[in-house]
Picture (cartoon, rainbow, N blue to C red):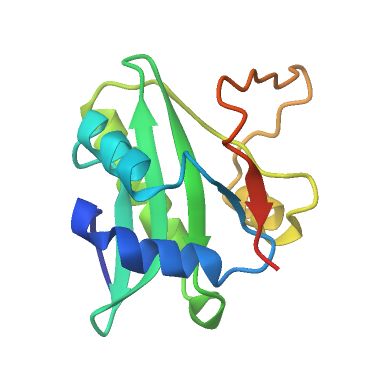
Length: 148
């Protein structure tokens, strides 16, 4: 298994991985090829994929604003879980962000995402109960669709 930086050319395979995960939330605009490529261009070398036998089995979109970083769409193919792939990808991103002198990383996990929340708790990330998360949608066509 190999962890490497995500390339724009990985999009189709990563998107298929996202679509294979039940309960995964995909946004029509944000998760389009053009927008993911734009994200990778804005955050060169930070996003990662995990490859096993030449196939992408995990992915993380990783970016920062110069101060704080966020991880998005952290996922591992269900058939490849329990192999520490997610943990290795997270630590690869952490090391890249340390080199960028970023001091804090956040992740948003849906409350109903039991697998994801168990993962973050196991890695001992701090669950915050002292903040509310707000958002304002500037593009009404950017609907979220849950993979069934």
